[in-house]
Image 1: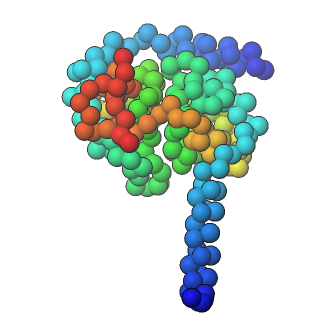
Image 2 (image 1 turned 90 degrees about the vertical axis):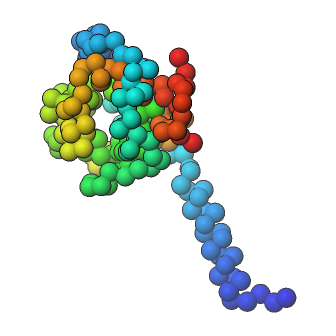
Image 3 (image 1 turned 180 degrees about the vertical axis):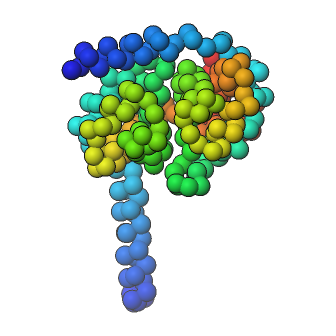
Length: 119
Length: 107
């Protein structure tokens, strides 16, 4: 059986798909700006006190949206406003990637479930 | 610098904790029904701007209370969340937070 051009294209596509998945799940390096967040939210997004939200496993684009909202003043919180003031757009993207990829403390709710998960 | 951050963190934690009603998770289960329309769907998108609505399972009840109170008072703005929170009493908010923070996970 000879290898056709179509076969080659399919093989290339398969490799590309595998590479894409590998890239999507690749752990990002801890950005230096995590130091700004860690005191309250924890280095890996598990917070130091219950009034500070857990961030571990939160959606990446939600974290980015929240940080941009603090930065623009659309979302108001004195502590967060001070923390984000020094962050660039690139810092915000890196932080969102970092916290979203930590071992998740957060999950989506199950509408079908009947009982509490844990006490 | 680091100790200054801790001072801010601790002060905020002390001021914010214990200021709210005790939540009843069983009551909250019924009151949280509407929340699931968005927060109970994997990767559900906010329409505009586009981002996934936040995961709430495993979040601290104290933070969920603070968020709902901020929407209710208009300090935090989001059309849908403002509408939802405006009809909730302080007790409703505490009950919902108690339930949602421990509610089962959608896999």
